[in-house]
Structures are given as structure tokens and as C-alpha cells.
Amino acid sequence: MPKSKVRKKVEPAGPANRTPVKISGGPSPAWYKALMLFFGLAGLVWLIVYYLAGDQITFIGDLNAWNFLIGFGLMVVGLIMTMWWR
Image (tube, rainbow, N blue to C red; front, side):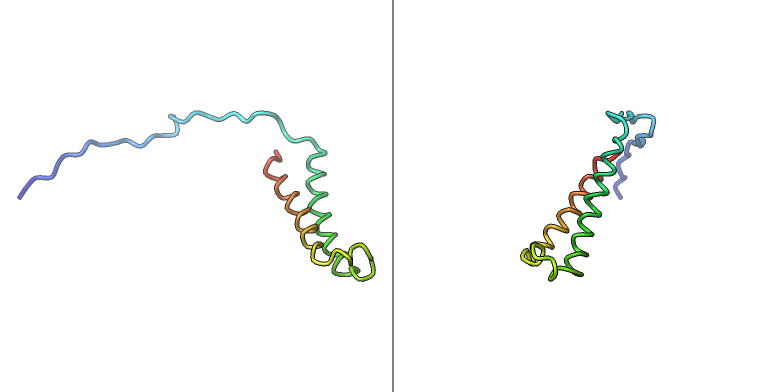
């Protein structure tokens, strides 16, 4: 029966081999957090107003299905802003 080949032992890289990554810049300014929350809440409020009073407010009623794009679009802008918030 043939003998198996002898393998070299490979040691896993430990945490000492890793170099730390420095984050550039400091924390986000206070207005950034306020603007981020504004966009999220503005989208939510837009959809609530559309559902509750869309037929009573003429310009919102005229937009029909575009109200979903506006409301969800505002919320997505607020959500995307969270990626750059520190």
C-alpha cells in the first residue's frame, strides 16, 4: 500500500498580522442627523396624508400613484443617508 505524502503544517494568520484601519474625519454634524430623520419622517407623513386626505387635497389627489414614489423616495433618501452617518 502506498504511503501518503507528508503535508506541511500551515499556521493561520493571527490578529497580530492585521493592520488597523483609520477612519478619516470625525463624527457627522448635528444637522446631518436632523436632515436624515427629516427625510424619513417626511416620506412617512406624505404617505399617511395621501391615504387619509388624498381626495380632499387637490394637488396630492392629482398625483395619484406618483404619491408612492414621492413618499418611498423620501424615505429611501433618509435610509441612504444612514450609510454615511458616523
